[in-house]
Picture 1: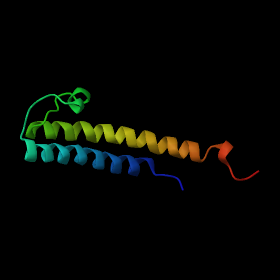
Picture 2: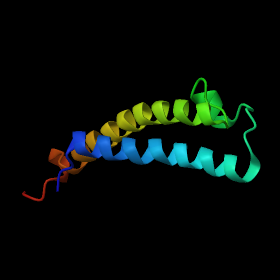
Picture 3: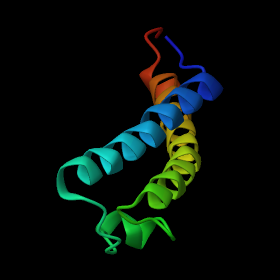
Picture 4: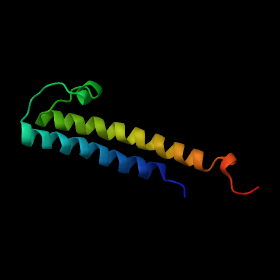
Length: 89
């Protein structure tokens, strides 16, 4: 079964983006906003453990998730349906 690249990329984008958003709010709820630069902050410019940082992280993660999901779905389709993997001989 082939993956629909656009649908998979959009789904992965939403999951990744809201995952980062809710993870940030989870940390804020239990540890408080720190504003410190985290590992994710080094990857996503402007991200920090703060309310504004959660929005910045959401936007970065939506874009990053869309690109990553599209690449994954494209590779999946390419490798699964390559001529060398064909069942017909």
